[in-house]
Image (cartoon, rainbow, N blue to C red; front, side, top):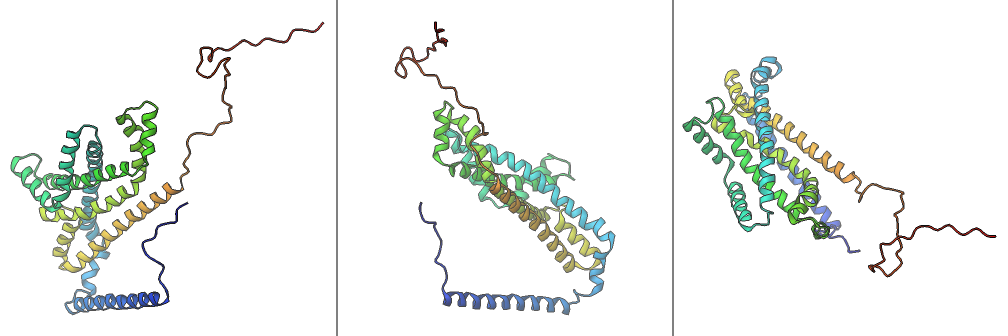
Length: 309
């Protein structure tokens, strides 16, 4: 059994002392930055109780924050569903047997991974608005979903490809040895295992979708950040409104992160067996000749012993 691989040696007493000193210095720097930020906010009156009171009233939540949360979750859920389909299709395309399919899917995936999400939102919004593809009220949502789908779908396609390649080669060899084609082996044996293995990464990608949905602010989509700006204009408390929006984003992303961790723990605890257990003994037929001989499959009928006189 090979020894486990480690990235670095265990720190000694001096190294631990040095790490503790750096930790204390870092904590002091963070505390200093927070103190300066709070002092600046207090100096400009942003910490006054009057600016935070609206968040204790139902109108601020019903009229601004909850619609913003609904907009963010709507774009995120639609984008995740479409990105999953896009990623699975192009991920399988990158694993296809035909070379030209792999090349085309690779170009598409690499292109949309390289283009910034905000740029794709602007392009899609102008395309839909000028050509009347959707209703004017739907154009911002459609542009946000398009950009998030193309980018995150490309990332998922890479997850599918890398997940299949990370499996032991014996998985594919076993499928081919029992008569399956390469495509049948991929769909029946490799892909289900790869999807289970990369499920935590897929859940983590949902966090990226929720964060990137805030880029819809640039094309007037009614997500949480945009509604927070409107709330700040209505109650003259822009900075507190943005701070509350930041807290809500943190809560959403933290929830998704914990959910991904729970899924990963459940997958690690799940038992893996080769098949259902059985106590039935296999039927063994012994032929009269050598294995593979002409009489190997002949079964002589049972003859009871002759009665004794």
